[in-house]
Image (cartoon, helix red, strand yellow):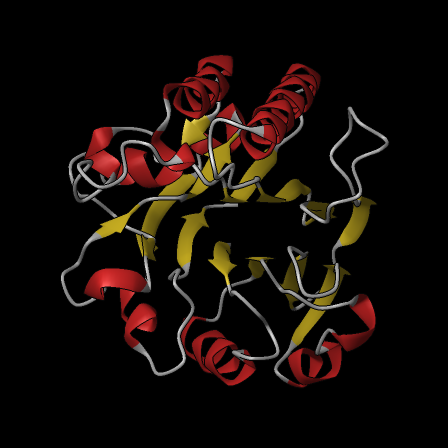
Length: 257
């Protein structure tokens, strides 16, 4: 089974790019972030014509996540991350598909920091950690996939010099990510590529794509039983170089299930 994640940065604006990539890559499941549309404007029909059913958790011009399924439909299990009933930002959607629980994540960016946005990021991270611990304790085969908005280590960014004050690289979110791994979750891309940078994001500014000045923000965390079934992982970096591209590239893993 091939599972992908793609921060599309506006699904209607980049629909043709998404459809072209789906035709070529043929993932079985896709976790999308920053769809930036209301549910009523989500292009479900165009995606269905391409062979994908969808679950959407939209939020106007901001945020928004969705799950796409090829050759079947996922069973929606959750539309919000637990732990704060007052949080209405569309950053999490979850479904069961072929016996696997798949959580699609768009973790808060946290900039500028310090400040309320960074505090919200860390609260969200704490809620994710608590929920991940529950899933792990229950022994559920699970994937927690998406744009975590954290660069786990200095090896996951082209250079730190111009990013040292950015929320993406601060010690607190890095430590929160490390705690998830400490629960027993496996970072699939780093497991399959222990030494390569494997960037998934290149900023629109300063010619980042042309200089390969990227960073790894998009991650697959696998429960132990699924980690044992991991066979491949990679990033379709060339998609970032397409016309009208998102600032992220799709990343994917393959599981022997």
